[in-house]
Image (cartoon, rainbow, N blue to C red):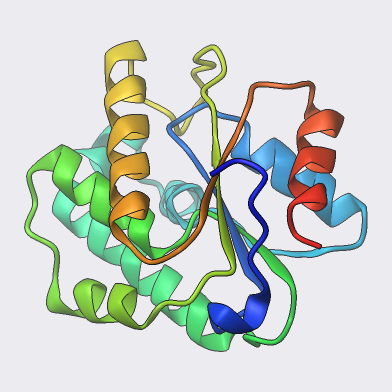
Length: 185
């Protein structure tokens, strides 16, 4: 569906999701959009990890309790989306359906709160960013096989939902931003 434009009212919000597997350039793209003056959100998995590290927990300790980790991320994402104005144009660094993909990847049954929140979610556009070479960092623990599988699951989840999905090719960062902006007007 690349290049197809859908007006906000049909989907009930001005929110545009930037998603994809680990190391697809989501946060870089969101940061560039923010620098251009657009409203953006943060990725809650990384935020949760940062908060836990401040309290003295290691990445391994955080990741060893995947169900607890995923529930905490979902709670943060639900609160964030409740607090957003649906009429405002906002670029989200991941959204609630991403958690469904991670739950599938981990073999965890989604909580009713997640299912309910996804059923009520409204996004104008979902931008699925093609993968870039895997760039491990302190919070990213996936290998290339997990990166690919998560990317496939994220695409699958969003395509099961009633939101337009636009695939964003692996372009230089500023060109990706322009590609996205050209499809949100």
